[in-house]
Image (cartoon, rainbow over all chains, first blue to last red; front, side, top):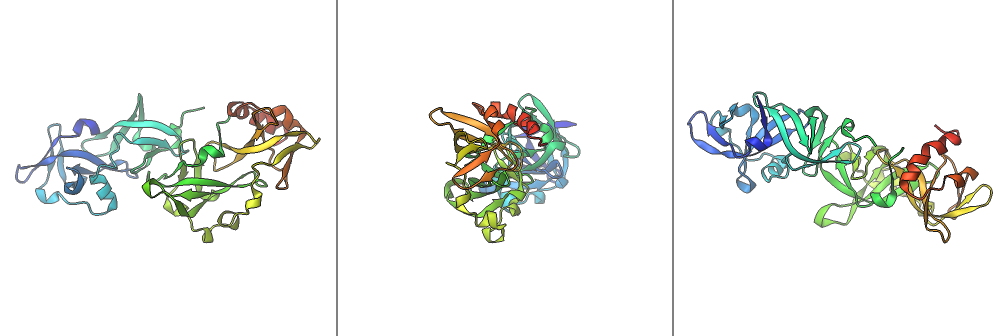
Length: 151
Length: 186
């Protein structure tokens, strides 16, 4: 089933083991090379925590289910710290072609809720296949040159 | 039709990694080789509030593409210590600057003085023309042959260059290919 980053923001995160509510989805951290969701970021700033995709038992329409609350962990490196601070969120990110030209702003991202695989990036009225994504960081998401507008 | 930009439009552009999407530096200035007709590299400033000169330089070989909004590199290792860069990037000769040089045709007509470099957008720093100050007649743009004589005070261009003087970058973008075809260049 297809989900979107915007649509899943704020969804509650529950523990499968205890049925406790652990928080809500802040945003999703992507692995641009693998073109998939790497982790769910819960909360933000110093209290921000992550759950790796592999620790989910389901990314459902009403709740994101985590195997148990031990799966919540603090950021492990600089990149994950940047993620909990919100600076890696793909939604709202500038899109650059690998030729160095701006293509617009990423309004939303769709992904497969079963596998975490990214599907499309929505940039204005364009749907760009996630296969064009080369890299993503605090400054920009970089897309391959097939997305370059023809002069 | 070619998309073109001037070297002054490149100054201040972020240097962004393709794989990481991070702005690792910004362009301070371009280092140009008139003989090669291309950039040999760029010098850098730091990004953000700690702005100031960046110690490293970016050799042209490490440039993935020069775009209108960013200079792209594969990753942060593309930025190198000047000591480890080729001599023309790490220790550029300042007298090689062509800005202010008189542009003379082989027939002895002055077209004006070089005001700026014109680069091919999306290339790794190919210079395809110059912006010139025409004597008492505003700005113009001329295409460049691959090889030309440069002395540091003047540069000599083929006579047909005079037919190709353009009023703007769009005009030059349209004229570059025809000029090159007429020059027998590919």
